[in-house]
Image 1 (tube, rainbow, N blue to C red):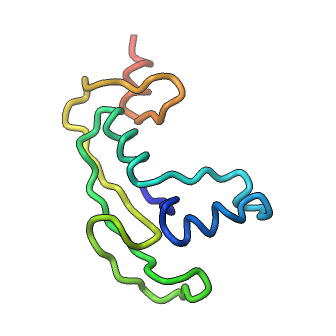
Image 2: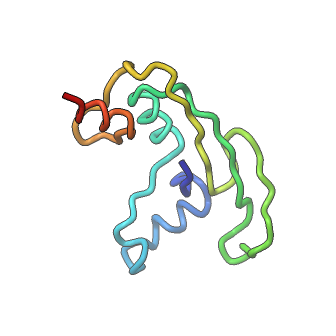
Image 3: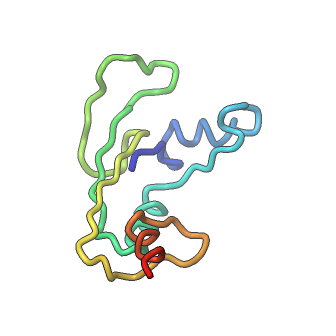
Length: 108
């Protein structure tokens, strides 16, 4: 799952100006900790993070950006997680849901 970390410089910029921006007005920004916690509550293993975009928004180019593992710097984060136990805890109503959970609920 890839997203702009709310706690990153770019995430703070987008969050601060989202009420004035047609595109971001409807957006919800989450921190790495919030998304990671929801992933684990859905029964996935602890996610592994990678990050990129280490510059301010006005200096982002279309050139390839470096990728670093872990979290704490960089504005765009990718979390990778696997679900090794498909019978693990199911999310509560209103929380993020995995495709596996949805399929299990459709089975007779």
